[in-house]
Amino acid sequence: MSDCIFCKIVTGEIPSKKVYEDENVFAFHDINPAADIHVLVIPKKHIASLNELTEQDEKLMGKFMLSIPKVAKLLGLKGFKTVFNTGKEGGQMVFHIHAHILGGKIKLKLPE
Image (tube, rainbow, N blue to C red; front, side, top):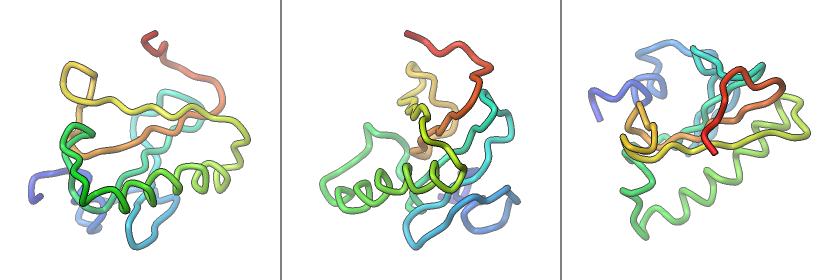
């Protein structure tokens, strides 16, 4: 999607501090970290939110989910939090599916 900031990060149009990349997934440091370590993991394919997933996305999302512990391991994390915000009411600010990997001391109180 041409106006999606995360799609522009994947293509290199917008610079990022990349942590991991494969054919399906891209991971990079959050520019406003909410923890000592705060990385975003995104599928390269633009999908606006978890609510937009279809059965055709099943294989991609499996690879996406499997990449999360790989990224955490690259970051040296043995334990971490994984957060998905879904939809405007769920706190999603960028409408491209992404997982937040949070490690170390959390600087932001998460909703219960």
